Image 1 (tube, rainbow, N blue to C red):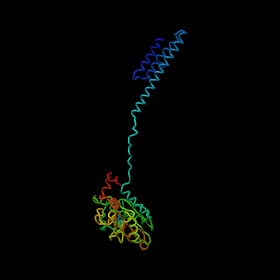
Image 2: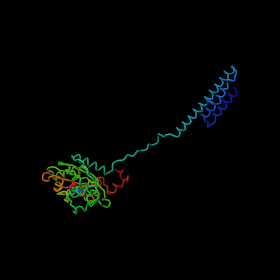
Image 3: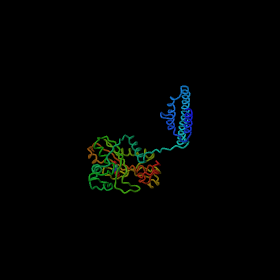
Length: 337
Ligand code: DAH
């Protein structure tokens, strides 16, 4: 029996030495309930009373030795696994980090926000209107009846005979005046549509910002002062404005308004095409017909209105020479703002 115990010990230790030893299988095979060592212990009843404690002690020693060897092999395997993993997941903390790119506002959005801030500073509120609009608001209420030649320059996308994509932000004037009684001081930025072919200065979709002030005793000088203040804040303190007579059906008198070129100061350069002036908007005193169309008595109230192209203002401001750049989403362009 003693030899048997020695054999078990040697066999177990030898198996544990093998490189890919399955430690759990070894434990079950030798120390488990049906294991070889247990079988020996079961047979101890056949021994003499003198031999029993000796063999018992020996069996315990063998068990302890196998257990110790098992523990060593298991610990070594665990350590090796950990080291392998550490080597695999090695992190080089001296590597430069990956830079997260942060986006920013589109130049048109930036210019729009800047313009809004300037007008809000003068007491204006922002009003919104639908881009899909009734012919009534886009044309008729603005004193542009059916078949009026002024419609030609704003030929737009019709959805039905009476519904279209708005060709200007002016219909918001009508919507505001219908709902609100004077004093009114609003601006209305937004998209407008015209069936123009895309080129360096035209786009079938572009943006305008409308302005409207209605109150008692509003005159052309209020319009001039408001636009001059806006132009100086937007283009610089030295900016001058110039009114040229024009015709819009919804204002009387009407004007087109230029700002002195902010690059050359009026001498003439590439940006202003040698003119010294850059046209940025249309404006005028709200036509009495438009006021009464909206339920406002033109005998009591007067008002001024203006409408400017956001693209035009932004192109002027940043010296951009092609409107298409705004819509192409080319990062080489957008990154510059
Ligand atoms: N809606 C005009 C256009 O798109 C611009 C304009 C001119 C707006 C005069 C106005 C205005 O409010 O008073 O050409």
